[in-house]
Length: 302
Image (cartoon, rainbow, N blue to C red; front, side, top):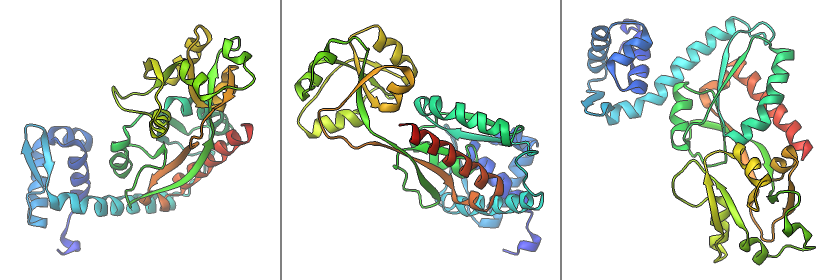
């Protein structure tokens, strides 16, 4: 391959086809016609001597060669973009850009007010968009630039992802302030199991962190309500005898009663993830440091 004779726009087309898995959609993203995308794909196939994408009922499926080269292509494209960005000299106060963050609703509730306040003071033209990206999709979306950061427990093993511990907090049992169980001086494991509980999960089945811990102890609790979002939980707790087991900050923020758990459980640990290509991007590094600083303020409150 002679790089001097290669149209670098072909690699941009490759990245978009890989992400969209559809030539028409890829054309819409690139701002060109579908035949032009097909032509670019033909040239890419000739360049790599491989089909690269196979047309199926589920869309354009990448071949092993395409899967092998995608991260290198994305890193190279990101490096070029970052070099251009560096030349423009990033200034937070005047910069106009949008950062896209994958984050759960409970963390969103705690982080965003402080983060937006900070941005208003030091970077008033920077915008934030948040999404809840399925954890299995986070590495791909970070690599493609669909999201800039992901806040998750330390579960990702993709070697192209960088991460830093951003937050740690203990789990507690949370109930309404006049709940009968609060009359007890000491809450036993049996007291806890006798309660009816709320479990928050966007999955239809499967054990969460608390129930996996109980399972290892040979125990199980009664789940009366399985809901999708944490933000509904305070209203239910306030109007029922149901308990929820989550972080202490959740109770403090919402003026609910809490007690330490009568069993050992690992704390909630959150990491900030980003793709390695972002390491050379000044604006991403600045945003990363601001998020670490903001979470540091939350940590001091607990």
